[in-house]
Image (cartoon, rainbow, N blue to C red; front, side, top):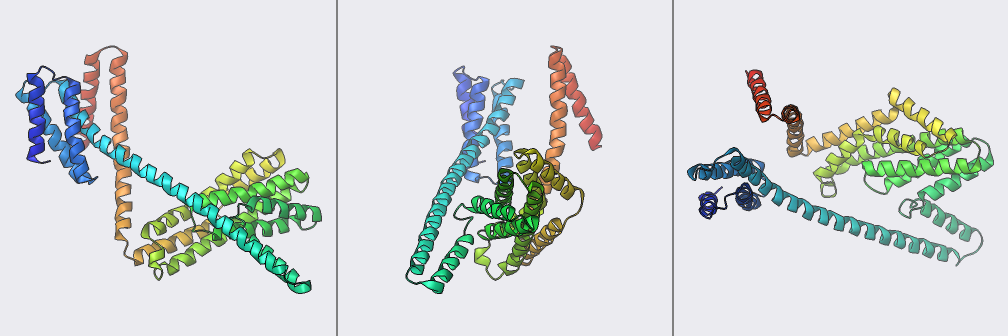
Length: 392
């Protein structure tokens, strides 16, 4: 903090005291405004914020001492105001970021709609071309157009309906139902996951869509429910394994295509791969919760079985995650490594702070419950003594 800022705090406190308006609220407001200006200048640099807060509080308390107003309430107001000043700036920045994110999501949604519309128009053009011919050529073009549409069912929002229809055909056929459903679910999952980069949200959405489509179709048919559910779960599992393997291959090319793969994207992919199996199991339970009794029982058995034993899905996900981590290291992304270290230290620090705050909250509550402030002060002194003993 600049000397000008310190002088401003001192002058504001003396001026308020002279006017007889030096309330706790005034002190808090003075410290808040000073810290808000300072926080805007340092723009979130934590060490600078720590130093600025220390200096702001020190300046305010010294000014209070000079005017003979450094009581408990006034000192607490100075500290509270300084912290509120930082919060005020950061909350504003957070809201601006949320607004930008919301606009970006709206833009993505808009572009997805345009992409789907463009694909539909292109597919219609392909069918129009088929009508220019007759016989075998026409049939070949129509089949090719349908196959092309199958490759884009996720972008077109048709994954669930396509799975439902395919499973209906499998059940109507009545033979090799489970095996057929495995193939349907695997291909649907693989195609949907291939339409965009690997991420946990996509895993959840695709898994839920494919499983729901298969279960709903079997329940509507009223037969082959267990075979269909088991086949769908296995097919999705195989499709996700393929997606994990693809993520591993993608990571191997990330060094060559550096512009297409930002470091944070690789880092997010690594983290999402580590929770792949958890996402799969959670979605099995979610679909089970809204399914009929027969499907619910099978889905829960599958979820519990996957949780209880090691699985190929878990192995492939971990292997792919390690590959992505290796790519990050090879690209010299030391900042991410440091970020992980800081995150670990922060988690430890937060845990320790929670213990102290929890004890303090209990101590204050204990004193307040008896209506005795003296009891509260004694409890707080006990806590401080514990901390000192522990540090020794």
